[in-house]
Length: 440
Image: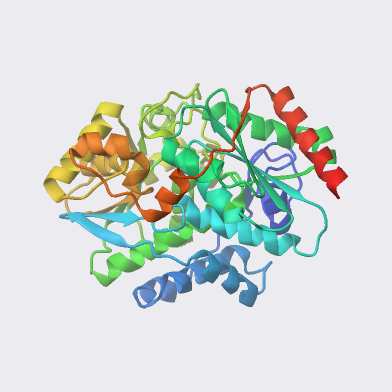
């Protein structure tokens, strides 16, 4: 399958080119030239399949023309070494728990898949591939741990100073090895801008081999479609798959875009709800048809603190730039910090279920938007303990910290402070490349 740029000014690319380049030469995002439907027999019998079996069938529709099934199966089964269960929270509402992977966040799925796919495509090549990733929270930890120790790949994690939780920060600043954490004096949008500018810098790209592990990379966001199909399979086992609505906490919009791709492939979903925090750029677009990016503001649901969501371009492409068609498939809502905190408290009081701030935003949007006769799933995207202070204040009781998080917390912080000026970032990257060349 070929991939084209959302900007429409770059040549079509192969899967390998799309994955290793990440961003198209014209600055656009790669998208598949076609979205193949899954067979009717697949959704009819999906309740009898395992998570890995479901993921393999979905992956074959995107990647089967480029990767032999045996190799693709190996990537899938190695990626999905953990479960993503649905848990009943209240009448007609379930949580899809996406935090049972190595870093306790939903991005483990996409990050681990991309790491293995990139290693597959570059295993016969020499030289280092440099992975640039901007993070507002969980992306950094998932990508860093997904790529940790992989030969021939060095990861640079850019994160905004004082704007991620200490536990999240510890998950990617304590690793060392082939992982370098850069603490940027700015916002997530500044971090993302640095990454995008690096990809458009022809001089830098002539010196270094660059790719991204953000959801701008097709190998990061497309695998997230796997767990939407798996959630449907679990609901079907319960006899609750009719009139299914899925609420997604939305920041850079890779997650909900993957869900929309699953829907276009034939996943029987009634509609989606995009849950925003105070960074309500997409919610404003749904109401007005006008897209107005702006500087992000800091909230307690920090992974959603995005003022110019990259994957909005993919949503526009998917719906042929039609606001009318988009609002038929997606509802939305937006919530301030106090509402999110109150949601954590209320859900715990009513159902004894503990939400993280991002899942709370999605739960709140679902409870506000679910209609009679509908069944709802919200995505619980990170373990609540990653936001320990916020959650404990809301529920009034102490959380147990998982052992995996404790190990990160006790590690030594190794990050490098940096301004948000591109010239400083570029100078640092070139110095690292020169040092690597001298070592070789």
